[in-house]
Length: 130
Picture 1 (tube, rainbow, N blue to C red):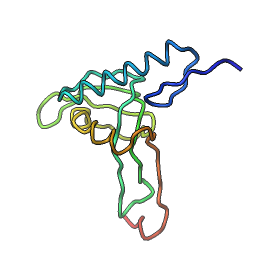
Picture 2 (cartoon, helix red, strand yellow):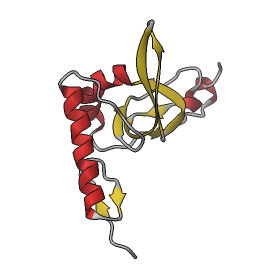
Picture 3 (cartoon, one colour):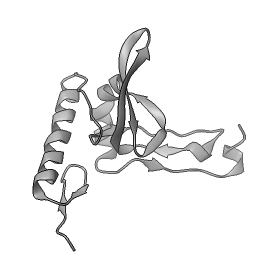
Picture 4 (cartoon, helix red, strand yellow):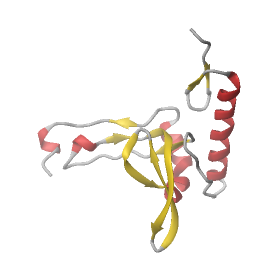
């Protein structure tokens, strides 16, 4: 079995030490830029935080926030301005406004620490009547 190396920031595993340390450095770079009030450019494979989404009328779509791997980055329009949007591996059916998420990274990092985002459906009928 090949040796595995872990990114201490995200818990992801890599086949070599260099990739794990590179992941750590990139994660810290993104978070530092966000902490400074900037919106860093993302690329597929980057890891960011996304928030929790809970629904009263369609609980089957409930989603717990946390760390998430960027799958796609694209420009779109928000409030008449070009804005970066991201899609993450853990929630492929949703596009997130990266400008808004960047401003929330510190709070989300504090809330979720090293937990990864994941679906958390609530299938009880009383929460799925929409």
